Image: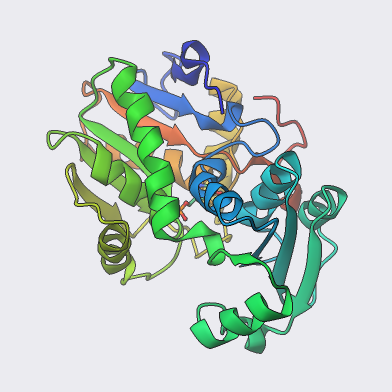
Length: 306
Ligand SMILES: *Cc1c(COP(=O)(O)O)cnc(C)c1O
């Protein structure tokens, strides 16, 4: 994937948002890169796809919900590379705009019950699925794997190559795979701060360490995860988040979605508003994409042009 660094970084406009100045926040616009699979997901998938190719496999299977950005990206990138893709989808709902896109790109959808889905990381079930669709590479839910972490090292490299200096690099966290890649790549004087999109995912830190270990990488940058900006839980919103997002989009002309990037900027704004972080320090916010998911939130306008 060719990334144009001239448009990759942009500063927030110098307009105080709800009285908080945010002009020292730079945004890394991964949402504008990656064609049909923008954001962090194509970084997470690239090594798995290369592995499949090396092994002569032309079929890839993975797991997710009906609004999964991971499945959406897998369908897009798989189609580009001429690979067959299969999605094992949780729950009854398989007619979301996200899965409609995925089907259009040739993805084969296999709906399973919520109970059955819970076994998505059970090696026995993964092996069964690999046999049923053989020959086939199975990628874990959310692209959470050593390959996924190694692919995200590239995001760190893009930050270092920009020659810009930041004291903090802030990004939203689901599985922690992207954060792990950044922590392995960035310098020790940078603090990588993850904003958890989930409520009470207290094992996230352990999962980050385990995924670094699995990839044969060690943490370099200092890092932590903030757990109190979930705004009601995964894919949930509250009134404060919704009004913040509308004000932010209006002031900054940058589109967000409520699952990850809305909570990211909401958290940065709150950290600045409470003086936990100084408005003078150079902060990098990573816009990890996901804008295709806006279609699940009717209170947002449909315009994704940001
Ligand atoms: C998947 C996703 C994340 C979370 O990435 P992890 O590597 O799972 O932590 C963040 N933002 C967006 C937009 C995503 O789609």
